[in-house]
Length: 115
Image 1 (cartoon, helix red, strand yellow):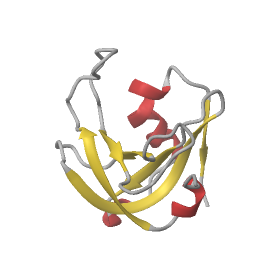
Image 2 (image 1 turned 30 degrees about the vertical axis):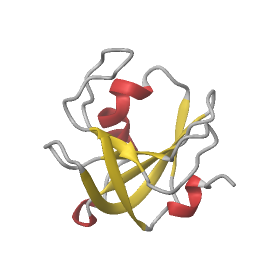
Image 3 (image 1 turned 45 degrees about the vertical axis):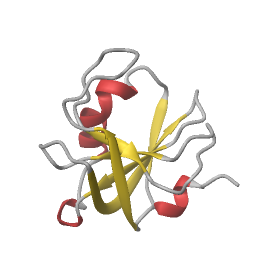
């Protein structure tokens, strides 16, 4: 059974970073400008665990808890991404989310979904 990314909106979630800030993508070679990882024990439509950006922190992390404030829904790919931030940074404009995730999302048609 697949995990619905929308179920996480507004909820606390733990993210395990398999691609921390500053690391390089294993295939495409670009540098991660934000912490990026997955939510353990979930299953996205692509068959992998549900991916998540962890924004609002300027150092590499291994794992962190935060609040899911939005979802980046790729309209040309079955791969939604949670946008998770520390509890103290709940207010983030769509424009700021776009800026911080553009290093990877620039290659995909997408929209930001909020509650």
